[in-house]
Length: 338
Ligand SMILES: NC(=O)c1ccc[n+]([C@@H]2O[C@H](COP(=O)([O-])OP(=O)(O)OC[C@H]3O[C@@H](n4cnc5c(N)ncnc54)[C@H](OP(=O)(O)O)[C@@H]3O)[C@@H](O)[C@H]2O)c1
Image (cartoon, rainbow, N blue to C red):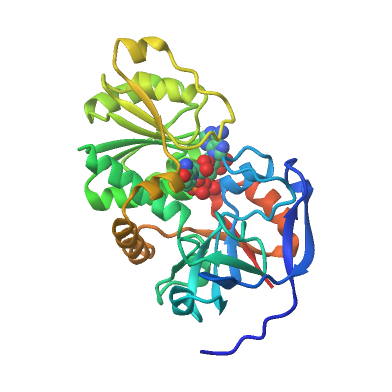
């Protein structure tokens, strides 16, 4: 293993208050030391995800007192290990690391992580760029397919479908013989998904959307929807699907509350549920999660790859966030650590 000299201080992006990207600044902090069953990761890349944007404004489910270091996932190399067999196993390995739990967010040159779920080994064939985006969206796409297959669904309704996650669900779904009914908000997104092989793509801002959606859901017997938008769209989905259908809300990109007609719940036995990756993972067995990780790592090149639009140095984190927000469909923005 090559010896890496660990400096005393590191570059970190710090959020001072939950008031958006303007509350971010770069500072130098001492490099932390890993304790028992912990490792020190030299972070290479971290994406900006919608959950990071939500974190900056205090809209995300995890809200520790500020100042915090944001960054929900990243990649890097384990450069030192605390005591413990597992920590030593990871020494020198390339890993994906989660921004949850010990050590906090990964928009940082170095981060300490627990070996119990904080770091996951990366496939040798994966670049550190793709590795940085191998937890949140790939595992969520795999979870959606898993949930759908368990429920015996042959068709899925999906909103914000031109997102990175949406493209993964489409590709995995096609591979598993599951039809995806895609809902997007712009015509360019219809063209984009169709060019990538999607069969059914509807624009929620087009006249006649509700009727088209109802027709297609009934023709394909679509009884499960994964909704990233919320607001009035959730009710449109629920209304369009046959009786006994379910909408699983997994984000609120519209930043609107869910408005649902009670008739749909009472007389048509339709339901609303939710999905959050962390709690979903903790309900699965360790063996299942390890198999899921192994499979999703293998499937990244074929079905679970994220397009990268641009890479910014961490020092330009604010510019990177503004750029990402202007064209989220255009691909991921990565932050590169020093
Ligand atoms: N619950 C969970 O555990 C979990 C896990 C993974 C992902 N997610 C969620 O999944 C979604 C997709 O994530 P991603 O990383 O794949 O995103 P992404 O690649 O950054 O793309 C975001 C997409 O959302 C669209 N969008 C933004 N605001 C919208 C709105 N108000 N109405 C409709 N569409 C809107 C964007 O379209 P424009 O280009 O038109 O803006 C873009 O296509 C996010 O909401 C994320 O939080 C949740």
